[in-house]
Figure 1 (tube, rainbow, N blue to C red):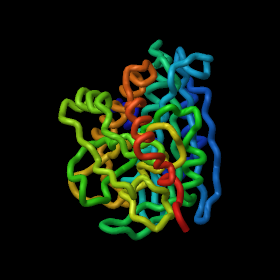
Figure 2 (cartoon, helix red, strand yellow):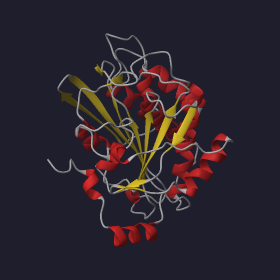
Figure 3 (cartoon, rainbow, N blue to C red):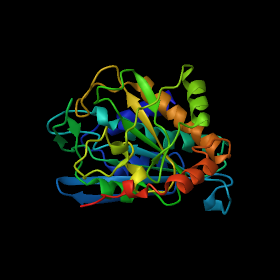
Figure 4 (cartoon, one colour):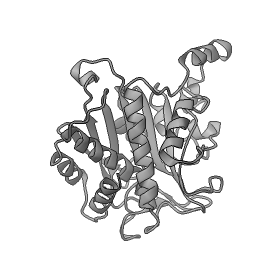
Length: 310
């Protein structure tokens, strides 16, 4: 996927980029089902882009194959006028859109997945920033509830949430890592199937993000979060796994020149292999029987998807 990642990176690295230009790029490759919505927020606007890649046995063709969602999470792809160029925070959008481009080209060449893939992200080349320890965070012109509204689709039977996760002091390696599966307020065990695919794709041992309970609660509750990577789990009952693009040191999300194409390519290639396996019914994000037993024994944890007690 190196070529697709490079093409998307160059496309987004522009002060004039918007959702329509992204859609035009994909339409030229044959992708027809693309939605672009410009949403005005408290400090500017952003363009939400949602792409449907149909599968041979997917819901769009009245089939029963499951649908995978790939969400590129970020505050913005640029922090203009404070920073010139594509910022670190853009990696999630680059990964998701490179997957859309690759899947479009696969279909043109006769390779179809079994189920549908829904890919969503948003395009904002001039997002605000905010102070955060240990490094500054990218902010966004719209709030997290709005992002979830336009990026999380009810047809998604499982979700991969791709986000730059470099602004912390816990994850200290270059590349990408996966989170445990999160579903309805439960942090479940790391999926064996997802670990296997990660080891195959990277040729190395799987790396896992250490999630906490507070990381899976909604933004805006006054509690510290590692970043927004698990926020789709707040707005969906589908199992969510984060794909964290990482670094060996703490890197602010609002700085430029720090994205590593090889890391984005590996994360995108992993998302693609998960899409193939999941839509064929060969990859489980969680053990459904064990999940039901957990709820019988300990009750629902869905209150962690809310703002809790006032």
